[in-house]
Image 1: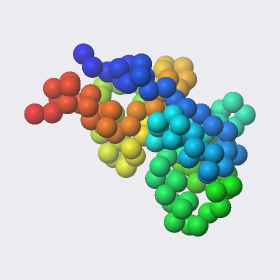
Image 2 (image 1 turned 120 degrees about the vertical axis):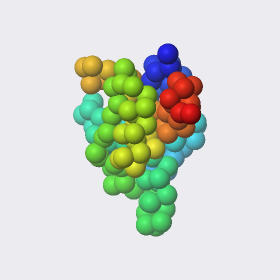
Image 3 (image 1 turned 90 degrees about the vertical axis):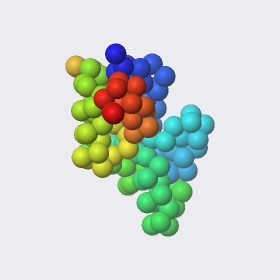
Length: 129
């Protein structure tokens, strides 16, 4: 059976400090080949910064030195690692998000799934006709 465990084995969560600049965040995302990073302050995840947030900053003509905390999403919607993949897909659609942190029962971040990963698992599960 396919699960979110299949994603976290290949997609590790990348974290950056809340005061990381837009420029540095974009460089990290490019270097790591990811389209989102989790934002940390005082060793706690406080948000997620995605390509969509970067585009919003560009449209705002923000300085590349602006901290990503000015543009990150702070309402983190998460999925438990053992949550049914179809439920995760619904959660992402209902919340209009393209990235979802994957957590364990203790609330620790294990990885981040994007909509493409989740859709691939939905298709592999046979849940889609």
